[in-house]
Amino acid sequence: MADRTTSSITIGAGRSTIMTVIADFDSYPEWAGQVKSARLLSTGEDGRPETVRFVLDAGVISDEYTLGYTWRDEDSVDWSIVEAGKMVSKLTGSYRLADVGSGTEVTYELAVDLKVPMIGMIKRKAEKVIVDTALKGLKKRVETS
Image (cartoon, rainbow, N blue to C red):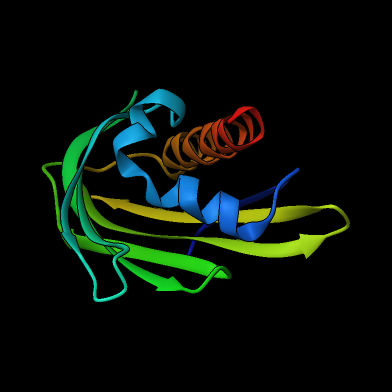
């Protein structure tokens, strides 16, 4: 899983506000385009989501799987697959937040491995669509809330 898709966007809000939206998995189907449902399974000692079950439909990548989350205050959140789906065998990602001017730069990094053979170019295109849609959706959600 050496290849990762990474993109960044600047959002006109503080890190705490953005992290609150990122941690609100129930609302993902409203702003994270390919997420059809996200169900919280457990929370950590800090009260933040620890495991979440997703149903994803990103065209060539459609599946259901469970992710585990590690939160680092308002700086970042990392996730990785804890229960693979029928198509997705490995999935890791992160949001990294950094103060810039009057806003926050959010960097989203994603790597997906599939159980089914797929041309790397098509898989990367699907990752890019997921990343770009999520960042634009997150920005819109935060800035209009």
